[in-house]
Length: 623
Image (cartoon, rainbow, N blue to C red):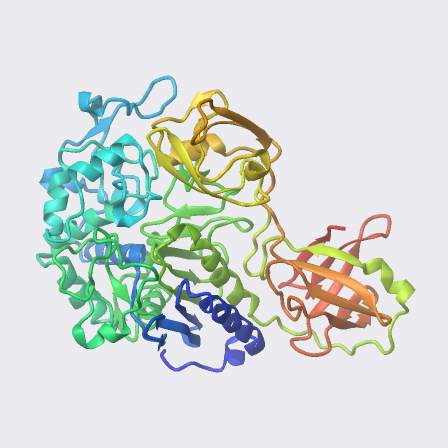
């Protein structure tokens, strides 16, 4: 799969793939990150593998397709597969208590909940305000992030993880030690409380690190050796592991601004002692393409079977019940994102954090790596970069989730273009700005979020003991317009304090329906009195894809003016279209995009459809 095939034969527009290359090249020129490697496979064949920018900006070493990256939390999917291999072997029971394999985690206690609010009582953990677990956490809980375990504050060197009292306690009593094996870390967890009752709350946690130790105990091998012998070698993932050998160090991509945090990735150029399941692995785009192709193939690649097909289906199907929350939103049709056994999974057709059709799955790493697998399109997307500022990685993840789908070719509908051109007066009724929502392709629908998911414009916050610290806001978002500023501490939502709440619990207070009012009490540095701001939650902005249509020289001209180009319509490049039939036009070059206008009951134009048919994209007249 290392030889790039003809994009056209794999259903891509070569011109629009080149548009993607230009986008990543432009970002590389800004030097944070230094560069990217992007890989796309479809139908088991490599459609795109492009390196842009530099591995090390100071040395001017160009990025290469097999540059080696720290993949952070994309290690979790590797750990999930390793875990399920032992389940397939009959050596590990998904629903067995974790303590069956790790006796040091037997009889763990749980932080008590306030009976009035249901929130954990975190005010004085020293008094051991704990209660027995209703049931033991299981191997399945570790894979689902429902074990009750949490991350410690500062894990991975990222301040974005929780900062409530339990998370602080984990950081003090069970810190990651690069010079100690994973067995020592897991042993230190036995004296700590769970924040949640097992199976009741989804919280991104250290469960995968614990699974690394489970694998060692069950297999009788150190975790790194198990991965090498059972997964990396059979899949020919030749550059993946917990460290980079000396003869490959020249391909290790530098992190802009500083070296990796010593408690997270460490110095991967040296042999490691801590082999943990939640992070620490290095890999390349070609290696991870092979890993994803195995998943897409139902557990097999090049005649080597890693997992049973039914095991892959289980792992990539939502395992969370309705009513549970993930990323601050309730699992269900409105949010469209669930969690399987190691993967975030798309569950809804409209809004989701996952690109592609229902059943697509993905995840990302804190240093700037991302992958997605779309079984419906047999499509794999991988992007790797290295950055320290995790809170801004979504900007780049947004590109890899949009640009490849926008490069897929739409089947042409042969028909002669009508001769002549309608007069300017007749086509003037089509003039206006048409909003296509968040969609870059009909194959990756991203409609507005339904009620229950109103937008506040708080782009990045972290939990602290006193509430939520605002790190970054959307400039024109509701919170910013109301006067909220970066650095503010949100102490209360409405009349209820959020002091001591976990990030997930605080998010649930902030979320609410579109058009619903919200009141925040804010503590601001150098101001003695709290500030109260009120504003209305808005619909998620849908200005990612817009077309402006006007008349020039008697012809209809179309131009992309939103955040992204779309089909034949590039940003800043007006394109004239020729008449095809009544209310329908066509670009005469490129990929021959068709645009048809739709009318309301009174016959007035109120929308437009690109490439009418099964792959159509619908927009509404915004002005």
